[in-house]
View 1 (cartoon, rainbow, N blue to C red):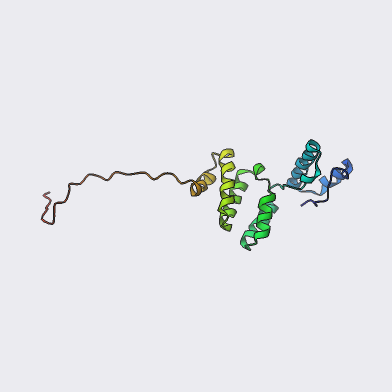
View 2 (cartoon, rainbow, N blue to C red; view 1 turned 90 degrees about the vertical axis):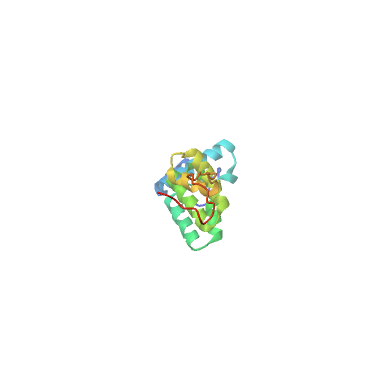
Length: 155
């Protein structure tokens, strides 16, 4: 991942060009978003606030869940821009949150997942954990009432 030392005063077009040769596509997308933030807000404090959910980030998150590493898990979940995640990556993040026992985070990820990807079957299925469907009342087939042990059926 890109170092946290970039600020709007020290970065030049040449520096950006050199960085593009070294960055993965997901890190490059992150850099483009951050440069847009700097030019829009003229504020370099938010330069490193979010990372794209790249395969490397997801692998680190999976390892953190497997190792029960709360610090790394929370850091990655907090820093990742889940609003730009594709459906399968978002589904994977929801599953990791549930595996970690972080039901609050799972529910937070389900809501945008359902609105952005209403056709994604697994996200819809997983959402039932948080918003179960109401129970249906099924009527039983009619049977004559039993009046006691002397009741006999004639066939």
